[in-house]
Amino acid sequence: MNRVYISIGSNQNTVVNVRAALDALSARFGELVISSVYESEAVGFEGENFLNLVVALDTDEPVGPLAEWLKQVEDDNGRERNRPRFSSRTLDLDVLTYGDLVGTIDGVELPRSEILSNAFVLQPLAEIAPDERHLVSGERYADLWQAYERDQRLWPIEFHWQGQRISPRA
Image 1 (cartoon, rainbow, N blue to C red):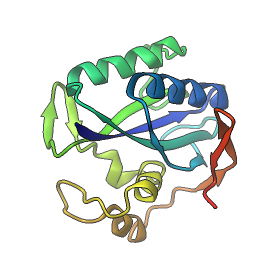
Image 2: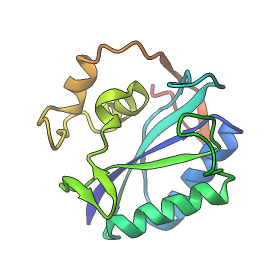
Image 3: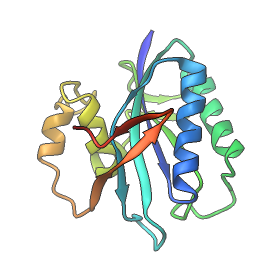
């Protein structure tokens, strides 16, 4: 089994879409480790605020089929693929890391470069995997978050899923 970290983001019908993503991931992979849910300003374009989080799961499913399945979940939740890269979206699901794989595997960049550049990816990842190390830099995610210096605002929000409060952390 491989430990996989997946980012979830949405800035359209956010609560419904984030819950739909968690439902789909849980139904397919079972138990999830879920970060707090963060609200953040749109990066790279003017738009509504995003909800972002990171989940960890264990799977033996290869990278390519996993990435294709994530795209299908996005599509099932109204993702429009003919829009500009930096634009509003119903749902965005990205593989951040997959076990100890490094490089471009089945068209998926591992580890995903956004880990080091976007607070809305790094902070929730550091929350649920503080002692894991970035497979290229070798630094702990907690240390990378501590040293993060970009001006991206995000804040934890109260969020419930399947009758339980998953955010913010107590």
